Amino acid sequence: MARCAVQKDCPTGELSRRKFLSIYSTLFPEGKAGPFYEHVFRTFDEDGSGRIDFKEFLQVILSILHNLRVFVFRQTKSLTT
Ligand SMILES: [Ca+2]
Image 1 (tube, rainbow, N blue to C red):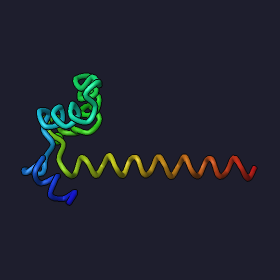
Image 2 (spheres, rainbow, N blue to C red; image 1 turned 30 degrees about the vertical axis):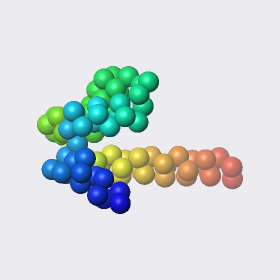
Image 3 (cartoon, helix red, strand yellow; image 1 turned 180 degrees about the vertical axis):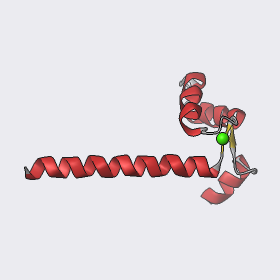
Image 4 (cartoon, rainbow, N blue to C red; image 1 turned 90 degrees about the horizontal axis):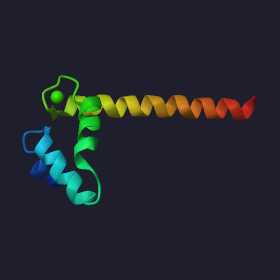
């Protein structure tokens, strides 16, 4: 079901500015979509294409997982020393 929603929202496999703002405004009607969009795309859109492709998305996910692993390691180490 989630895959169908992604294919419907991003049929090219990339997330555009327009689609991002549409999804964000639907999920967070009280939120400030513009500033958040700028932050997200500055972080995710590595090639500056104005779209987030699957490779860029995976790189961010891997970065988050790495940072989470480092955080857990440090927390665990501080408990044992
Ligand atoms: Ca891009």
